[in-house]
Amino acid sequence: MARTKTATKPAAPIAADHRLHAIGVIRSTLKSRSEAPRQGREGAPDAWLEVRPSVAKGLDGIAVGDEIVVVTWLHQARRHVLEVRPRGDRRRRLTGVFATRSPDRPNPLGLHPVTVKRIDGTRLLIGPIEAIDGTPVVDIKPMLGRLGV
Image (cartoon, rainbow, N blue to C red; front, side, top):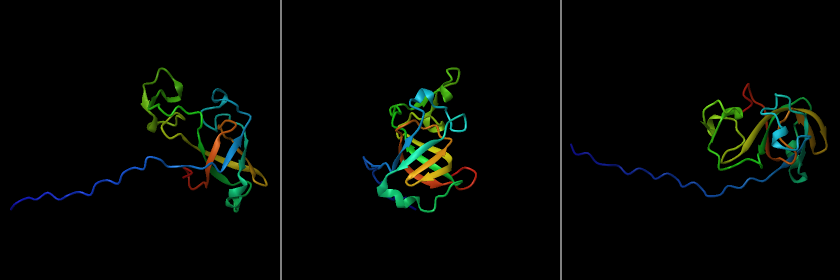
């Protein structure tokens, strides 16, 4: 019996550009990366998440005490970095950024599980959060399950 090759469908091309639009910004006492703890639960302060008026209706249903995941664009990240020493520890071997929580990565999205502590119009007092002042917020999601995703 003769074998025939079947053509495989070529993979869809990856679009060169995907655009994210900030829905808000973090207002924090942390002003630089060097001031920020590695993770929110390592001594980070509470901060205000200011939501743009154009997306304010998206806050309907969020209440004080809710646990949410704030998705940020880590605007000071070094996007060319592909390997890091975990937690900046020079004794550790270089590790691919996709196996770490490093902010330095090709697409620097930050995931921050926080608690809503106060709501003032389109501002949410959240925390603890290690994001620095001026960090753009690209999404807010409810916490689901133990992992928050």
